[in-house]
Image 1 (cartoon, rainbow, N blue to C red):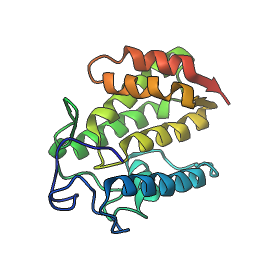
Image 2: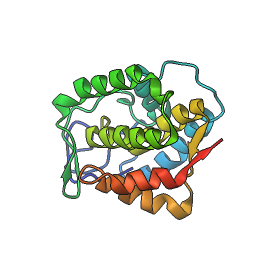
Image 3: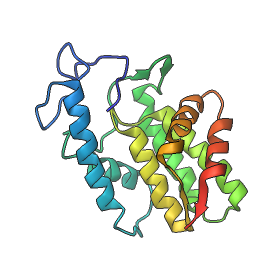
Image 4: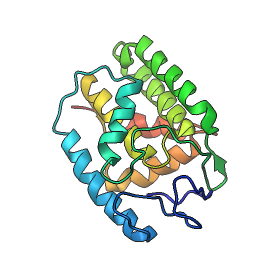
Amino acid sequence: MKDYTEKDNLYCYKGTIVLKNRLNITDFERLAQAEDEITAVNLAELQQHVFDDKLDYEFFLWLHQFVFSDIYEWAGTIRKVDISKENFKFAHYSFVENELRKLFKQLEEESYLKKYSRTDLVKKLTFYMTELNVLHPFREGNGRIIREYFRILLESLGYYINFTKNNKASYFKAMIDSPYDSENLLKFIQNNLRNI
């Protein structure tokens, strides 16, 4: 669970940054711990499946719902408030759905990256991960869903991105920098993209 800088009364308990949740936890740290534990189980379950589905807009929303529905009623739905992190304001909520649909349409037109060489695949992954980061479609859980979506997509191409404890910090920094300069994200993907 991330501490976004803007409070909202729609998703948070009044006067707090604690997200309203099915567990009725009102302490930020306790909710973060519960969220981490529950989502880890759900993500592990996803990793036991091979997905032949169309990896489209609806699938992306379904992923969020699957991972977060035990915690949040709004899991799998596009956010209805603006959010920012530190000095960066993510896409205005009124644009997110339309832009997300366009992005997934483009990805479908590119055959979900099946026809690209490794070099071009790295560039395309950098582009799509950056765009999804800027859109930040959900009120919470964007990073995990972006990583899980591309884990599934890459698995279908015979690849994976090596996220280890040693390199997660550089990945997070690259994602933070990506709206302004995606070079670090491109290098991270280039250095950590592996054959299955």
